[in-house]
Length: 236
Image (cartoon, rainbow, N blue to C red; front, side, top):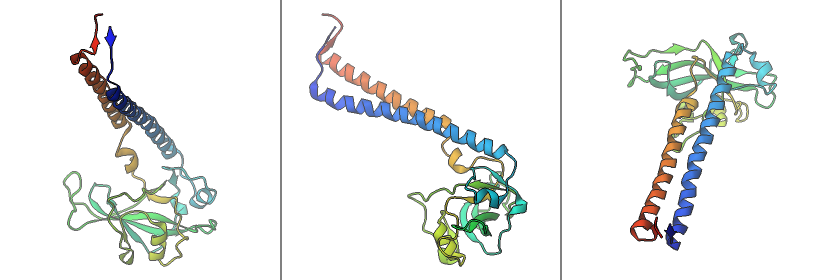
């Protein structure tokens, strides 16, 4: 076999090939990371409910960990956070502040108390009319960060499209640092949170296969180009 590679083409192909292989490996790492997150969440969700103050102020909450409702006392004030309800309809998730006196650094945490569907989009996933619902069970969750396409909030109307501890605290009449910025208490319906279901582990495997196939295609095109140019032959 004789092989006389084109120098410039080879210099361009090798970094591209390495990048495609790295992307595939990165997606496999993401798959393992996501699987670990789901396993940790499910383990926390299966544990007995914990007291709010003793868990939060000790700095030991875990995502998915259920809270003893007898230790949660929301106030009457509330902010609205855009999201979906138990029936899949879009609307406002209602969060009220809960006083946690023992937590000196942030004595308040937001707790989801109800869901109000939008008047213009009140259809649930099964076609039934969505109705206002009251939250019966809560769990610790880390609020999802603001994305690049998240709409602007309306703090004056207490309407938010992403978690903002400082702005929400001010909207409720408190100091900006009074609301816990790491956790909130979200409705516990037994399902995985959105950030764990939007891209499940299986999808990362699919992405990895795609990148590896592109790497294989690049190698095939590279070799075929040299074969047609007479620079790669199997005979001497």
